Length: 543
Image (tube, rainbow, N blue to C red; front, side, top):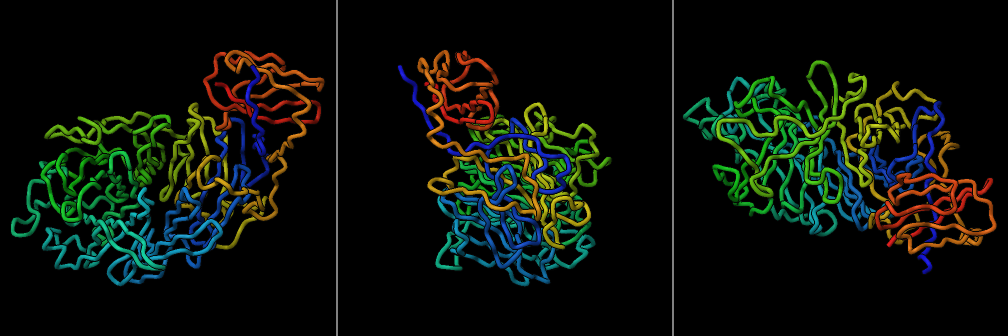
């Protein structure tokens, strides 16, 4: 029976680039995940979507710098936080604006949330229903903070920021309906003053936040510094990251706004209290400094279904204020009594005690990002890492081999040229996301590579190969139908055959024309046939 054949129009040829490259793509080796990487350089108005060679596939231009997150939506639109000037709320990560662009760069909608007392900051998130989660702060006056139980001596700026999350339904060109809201000020506890609000026993109420635990905030108004909100559709829960308290939290999203403002006294009922927390049990008086696991972390989120370590939480653990200064990637499994219901033993700290997996550099101090940064599990099992304060993106295999490296060439002084020293000027990047080649945003679109981001690029070691249909006349592929073998016939010489998965993994290299394929799973595979100076590429399907 004749096997099904599929032409493969463009295949990325994986190869390590020349060592003299100092910016852009440094390494693109076999085993990297073939997709498109989205990033928005800090302080600049551009957002780039690049291929693995660093060539621009699409680009969006805003009137404002990022503030900070960007996402490519399934329909090809770009969701972006933007930064507007705000003299009254002005800490790292402040944005104030949310923007939505179409694939061609047209501004479809924007929403400004920035006044003397409020501001969007750091993160937004595209909801499955088309709405948008937005992270923001509102200002509590000194009197309001003291009434909530804050120690007056720990109000160094005479105010305190309340972290809040809105779910926005975009309307018109620049308006939105708030359809859901959560505020941390509704979930506080303090054991300082019985005459003030929220008085109770901190260590007996881990579902609440101690308003007098300072962490690394030094009593400043920005005492929590939430730097990430990520939504999990399966659980209908939100994962939050507090950099200054070095904790992550999970809250329920299936509530009404009224329920989200209520306290349940536990982690199983409808309400807005913490369902789970992890990273620094000192924050609720169930541990010491020796028990601290997180240090200024960024981007904790559930690994999506279908990927390695699915349903676990992955994060970039910055190592802020840790000695020595070392960053790492951590993966943990939150203990559960049932799905989405987290285990907690009264009188103890939330588990786990140890991570399931931790990545550090072989020379640990070589890998450190004080701020920013992200880690993303990819479909081929690799992990994409953004070392944000160095503008350095790299991809590691499960064996921790670095197979892709990229250095952001965009700095406050302009875009660097190939050969320039990338360490001479800041090239900060908040977060990096990789989208697979079959991501729905790319359906029906011609992803023609353009110029690289850097000036005077050297891409001689990183080629995009195109295979016209006529080249397949050199060979004939016979299968059974790919249950046990691939047979390649034809008069053309055949020097080598490489077989790749559709995720870019090199499965096999051989010089044989009859290839045993019995050990491979059903699915689509890519064949590269080498004949002298000619390369023929095609797809085959194993049923």
